Length: 102
Image 1 (spheres, one colour):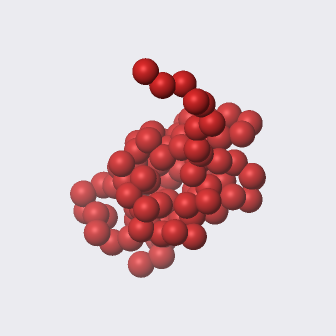
Image 2 (cartoon, rainbow, N blue to C red):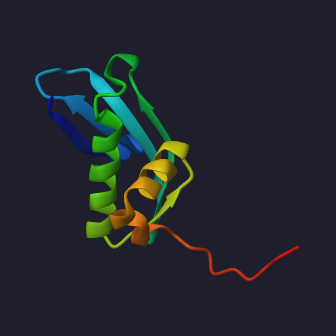
């Protein structure tokens, strides 16, 4: 199964479609600034779960973030878990430099 992922900036999300089908198989919603992209929600249609759609979304979105020199804030549990399992992307994760504490 070939999954094609495209950025749809006007909708603030990446969309995944299975080759040969018009239906959106999954989405990764984001908030983007000039320095950072925060992935806030990922959803895969039930009929595509477990078939690599989420992984294709994560890999494509993170590869584009790297190419654009953006840091990544994975607030979405799917993205956070996926990055944790793929150390080659951990250098993209935003680390707060704040020293404020309670």
